[in-house]
Length: 156
Image (cartoon, rainbow, N blue to C red; front, side, top):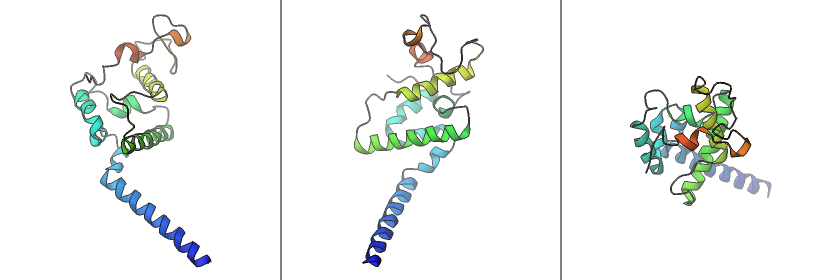
C-alpha cells in the first residue's frame, strides 16, 4: 500500500510539474521575469494596452514595470508581479477577466506610488501611499490616476 501511495504522489507531482512547465514555456511565463514591455502583450487582452503605450508620452521613459510594480525593493516587486501573474492567469483561464480591464485597489496604490516616485518634483511634500488632489481629505481626495488615467496608455 505504501508503494501505491508513493506512486500516486510521484505521478501527481510529475503531472503537475510537467503541465506547469509546459504552460510556463508555451505561455512565455519566463518573459514576465524581464523588464520587457512586450511581455505584457503576450496575453491578447493586453495587446490594445501595449499598442496604446507605444504611442504614449511615457514610452521613452517608462515600461510597464515602472508604473505597475513597486519600486521599494526587488522582493516586493516580484511578489506583486507573482500575485498579479497568478490572478491574471486564473482570470484569463476561467474567462472571468473584466472587459474592459480594471485596475485592482492594491495595484492602484502601486501605480500611485510610482507616479509620486518619478514625479516627486511635481508632488513636493506628498509621501508615497498618500492620496492627493483637490480636496486632499482622506478618501475624498483624488489620486494621480483619477485625472491622468490615460497618460501611460490610452485605450478606448
